[in-house]
Length: 295
Image (cartoon, rainbow, N blue to C red; front, side, top):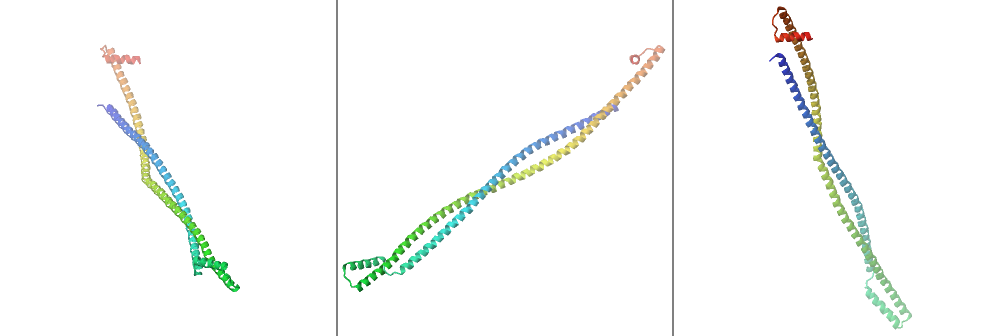
């Protein structure tokens, strides 16, 4: 194989190798861009999920706080109702004690006092008395009426006590109802709190995955930049090698042309000598002589 053909072969091999390397890097860059698109799509999905979970967590937090606020208001109302009920209970105790003290001032029973009063009235209407006896009888009657007033006052206290007891029972029922509302609100608050915690917990693996994706995206971008630099260098080398090959090809063609012209000149000169000497020309010599005359 001639040196020229060897040089051309080496140049072709070099260009082919560079071309394959360039294609491999371009394919690698395309694959990395495709992976970037996949990661960006996944990243967008995760961000949407995180946004939804965080919004849900915030909503549950707001609902929990709202329930807790209502619970505080209900507890304040319940405590006020208990206070009012306790105040009534104390009033009832005071009235019962007052009634007990009032009744303790009278030894006879109400029925006995009424009986005695009836007897006095009957005697007063049916029996003649002296002025002194009448005075004592009326005095006794007045004493009985005063004692009976104690029982009347005790009945009034009973009515007041019963009225207060009814109010106390109503306050107790209201307090119990408010307490049930507090329990129900507490359960709702707990449910919202647990849902909030769950939403925040669900964010953790997604946040971790998002960070991994961001890291991979950054890594791929770095790889792409590095590959682009390598691609630029290889393309520059390919361009230089191709230009060098073209230059060498032109130089080779020029050299071949010079060699052909020199050979034709030699053949033409030889033909001229043969013609002068009357010798027979070869086909190549004859063709060379015609070519030289034509040029």
